[in-house]
Length: 187
Image 1 (tube, rainbow, N blue to C red):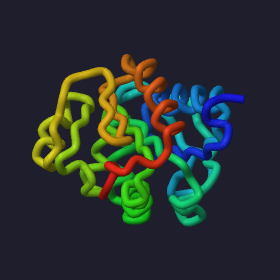
Image 2 (cartoon, helix red, strand yellow):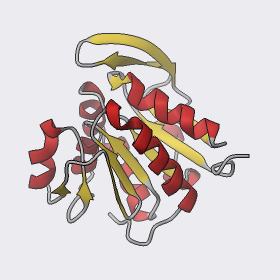
Image 3 (spheres, rainbow, N blue to C red):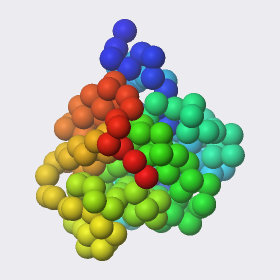
Image 4 (cartoon, rainbow, N blue to C red):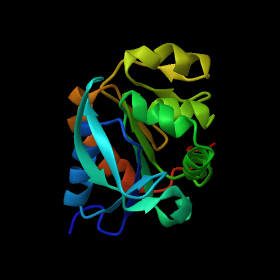
């Protein structure tokens, strides 16, 4: 039995997610005993990318946004990729789902371009986080304190910069999801 054997984790993604930023955390969470659901706007499959140009594997969607409630989950992972966060940001159901985790004080993890979704959800004000450098100014303009570190934890909010940071990111998400609700995590 792993540290997360009594935890159910949501992974919110659309086609265009960075392959390793979804598959690596999901594998680690499952190794730690978590139940993991891939959630998307539509049923079926979503397709991964490597970098900005190469479409790769498809992943089965376990639940659609219409079928889920943040109350059913202990934590949330937001993979990056250039296209994925942009699709999520346009979806009001996705934004409300993300906000609900913050309102409940539940841990949330976002990597690379994933924090773009947090900007739209308006949950980065006065929070310390990191991301890919291409969205640094967007996060600062949204009121975040941006730092250039492989993994940053701020009251249950875990962020990393790129696939190179996945080992540290995965270690921290296991730790934060095991801890559960964080009083400082807020919308």
